[in-house]
Length: 207
Image 1 (tube, rainbow, N blue to C red):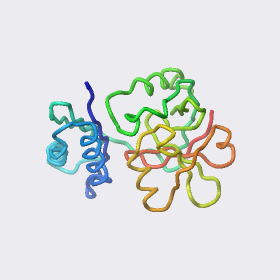
Image 2: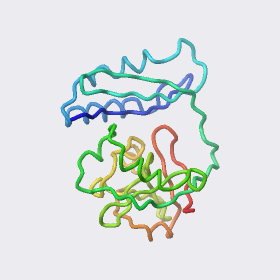
Image 3: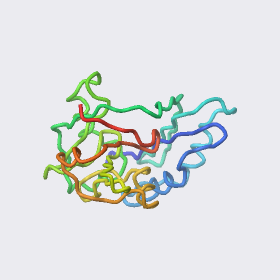
């Protein structure tokens, strides 16, 4: 199949891994569905990748390969300012709602890389992808949310063709978000947020 599974986690001194159990559960579920072995070693691999002392926040990228090998790499992580607003643009690259791999975080990133390459980084912090029906799906590295003033965030359903994001699922489980099919024109009816487990929710503005 020539594919690997990826989890990107945030680690905080004194607090540990953010949403660790959710990341491990997603990895195990994806591995079972795609026929990859070795997911049971993820927790130990993450712990082994940590520095000996609590020094600073870290970004940890874990990759599970087809042969069961796990690689975990750490890098310093600087959180965004609480009032950060990301500039967003909608890409012309489309996702296929019928592609089951989109629900898993895999090494197959061609569509996302193509969407990101459409727009210079100086013009947008994130790009948003649609599916073949013109429905909103997700960003190249984030899930998409709309605050329409109801008190509950709206996020595109998995049936539109998108990743089952860890932060996204947490918000759904906590009742802070619900799935709803969204189209580009809906974004003018509220406040846009993008986010992932590493960075949390980030306010967005269409550039």
